[in-house]
Image (cartoon, rainbow, N blue to C red; front, side, top):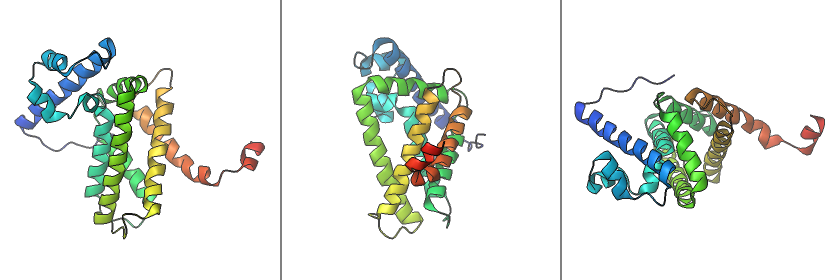
Length: 215
């Protein structure tokens, strides 16, 4: 399901390996020792990098802890930026951008990192708050991209903001359903949950008490 990655240089591959090592080490340390009890110094020592190197990749501990899902939404913005103008309903366009971003996530290890990261966030108020702030920034960035690339006439247009909020809400519902699974937590499982949540949006907008009374 993954898109063929572009060719990267040896230097880029080394930087990616260093970044991934910091993420894996951080998630392991946070799980074993607790988020608040684990210092940046301890993380740097475990990966054998300097604090300068750490902060070249991440702004804070929350950034490295939430990197798996932040990487997804960064890929979502990149897909929107590169996507050709599309005259379909905006909600369909941004749903496709999320699915394209998911297709770019590594099949090996990424889903497991998301699982660990989300469980840590559920137990760590500072991570949860940081995630909400990141989500708000991503929404603002998406509005800017839609304005610049898709001709959205007014960045304050409530309809575009509502479409993005619906997208994020559906994704969070899918993520919660995926996390609640007893066994399988693969990337394909998450994509299935996301597709199901997206498909449920139209029915949610017209749902009435009569609908559940008849079910």
